[in-house]
Length: 154
Length: 71
Image (cartoon, rainbow over all chains, first blue to last red; front, side, top):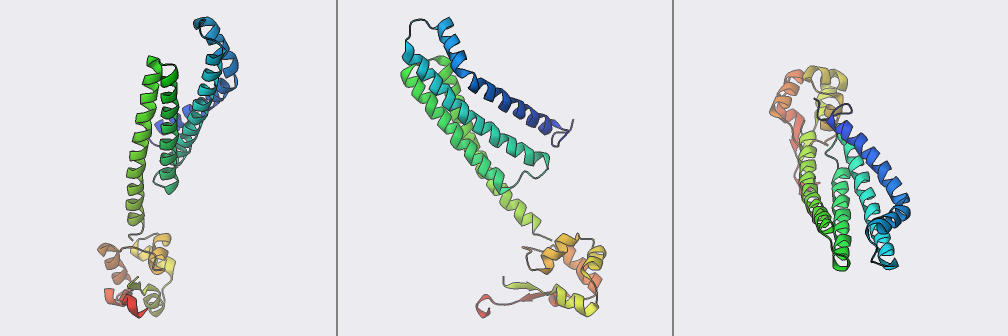
């Protein structure tokens, strides 16, 4: 199987990201209803405060997630054109890192107010994604420099 | 840059065009333009050899050193 290319694995991942973006939009738009349903079904003891907290919390982290998926999509587009080592992709990695670190910060806030195991797990995952993106972005920056040097060696 | 590529001078002397030279030394036109316009960061020995062979000249005819303070 071809790994990189429009018809390869990276092309498939790009379409998956498109689908994800669409699904996240739908989830974000229907969030007031679904959060209400969730609270009425599973949580009966907590009051109206929890509804609004959960709504805002999921909305903000969802928006940040949209940003991450959008940047990933951009990177996969350039990867499909076989031009991954560009300064734009270095910037994309930095943006992903910042967004993921914000997600983990928001999850940390939720841990303070309403602690749950899943929140800790997702928060830790976001934290590691952010740190990894920061490091891979720096590696990419060095790769871009090497590629420029190589391209200008005739 | 202290090293100047004088490819256009030698090419004019030999009365050879850029695209013709590109075919002779087996380079793309884009890469040869980069070299001719002094945009290149380095040149491979194999490329230099091919250009010298195609233009029947010495590396010194193509490359020139100019000290930075003189500029």
